[in-house]
Image (tube, rainbow, N blue to C red; front, top):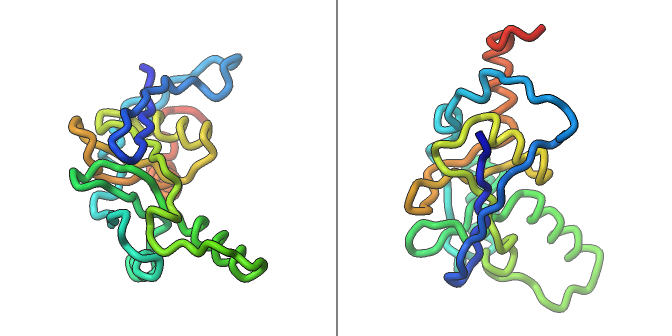
Length: 172
C-alpha cells in the first residue's frame, strides 16, 4: 500500500501529492507489524500549533515550555502552511551571532519552512517511517480528511513504538 505525501504551501496555493517510493527500491520489502499499525495509534494528539503572526520570542517560549521539537504553523482553518523546528531556531541564532544579519525574522511566517510534509490519518507507522527516512526529517504532521492538523509523529515516537513492540513481527 503506497502512502501519499502531501505538501502544503501557504497563501492558499494547492497542495501537490507525491507518492512515497520505497527507500531501497532494489530490496524486497518484508511486511512487518508497522505496515498494519495506524499512525494515529502512536502520534502525539496534544500538539501546539501556531499562527504565522506569532512572534519569534513567543514561538521559542512555546517550544521550551511544551518541551517540543517542532511547531506546525497553521492557517485560520487549522491546515498546515509551514513548520518551525528547534533546528530552525538554533540555525537562526547562530547566524545572528556570527554575522551582521540585515533582516531579522520577527514572526513564525518569516522563520518557518514554507511547506509542511504531511500524512493523512489512515497512514501507517511504516508510511511515516519511510517518509522520514526519504525526506531526512524528524517530524511528520498528521492531517484529517479536511487537511487540518490532528497530530504529529516524531522519530522518537517511532523509536519508542519499536522498543515497545520488538519481536512482534517475528524477525530476529
